[in-house]
Image (tube, rainbow, N blue to C red; front, side, top):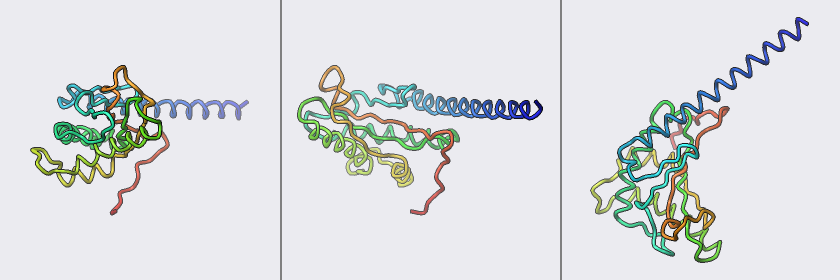
Length: 191
């Protein structure tokens, strides 16, 4: 009976610790997403607090069949990216934010493979526009660009997530990816 009682107490404490850790992680992630949503630069941007997605709205749209980003959209992005970098720099962001995936989308015109390539090209175009400072009023600093290299990834969705109208489907979203409970942040690298 004594062994059973000790085992029961031990299991209960480990469950409580796991539950507490999960709640702390959820609260930290909620803080990071809330910081992003409340930033003045997020006006006009849709921040989905539940799914950790940022829909750039009308600010970053593409013409049909094109992955060329407009100068206005590039300027908007260079002004918006510091919001995400500031969120990453918080203690909660440093602990839990793994990456920001730039996800490109298309409308349903064309084949699946064509649209998959186009969606990837759109994502890549967004990231490349951050590094192009020619003829711009707002350029990211070398330190910000280094952080972009560490944090941002590129992905594509073809036409798997079509919106109600075609213009809204030709978009880019940011997906904020968070670490799991048992994941540790990677150690700093000189690369």
